[in-house]
Image (cartoon, rainbow, N blue to C red; front, side):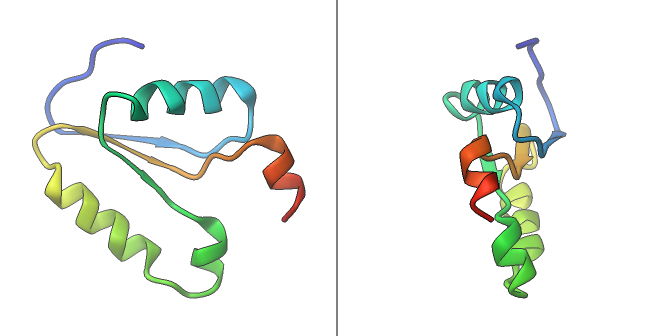
Length: 76
C-alpha cells in the first residue's frame, strides 16, 4: 500500500477478498478500529468508540473498517 503519514482517516466497508486483504495488511502495522455493524444496529456506542479511537491516534493515519469475510456476511 502507498505510504500515508500525518493525520488521515481511511474508511473500508466491503466484503470483497481484495478489501479484506488490504485491511489485514493495514492492521498488521497501523492502528485500526473495527466498526461492528451488528453492534451499531443494537444501539451500542460504536460511533463514540470509533471517535475516541481516532482521538487517541490524532497524529497518524487510522483505519475505520466494517469489513468481513463473505461467509461471515452471509450469516447475517
